[in-house]
Image (cartoon, rainbow, N blue to C red; front, side):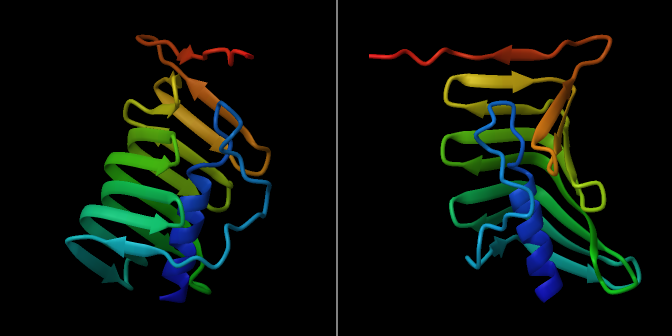
Length: 165
């Protein structure tokens, strides 16, 4: 259970790092703290043979000001030591922290690569500012991100200047 809690904390932290607006980035290695993580779902399935834990059905994971919504949350772990390898949020993914919202069909956090990839019509929005593309990758160690389009679509960013009084 401690491994699962840690995995979910990592997933929650990493899904908000390195945003296009820069305001979501967490310094490398910075942990939110000891706030409890609350996960609710219709069902949970743990499979030691496949080394995964699934939360299925209207999943809501909360820690502090951050909330992750998805139809499914899957935590994959390694056989040696039980370390978390990946965390996937699937279907109708919505991550909310204050006025910042990231949405998509799938978000995958790869622990070894220290990156999160958001796909399935991904969009990141903060207030009136937004960015969308085919794929949004957040590189957590370097506080940078890449938004890709494909041959049929282009990256779309809308940034509003902040007016000074």
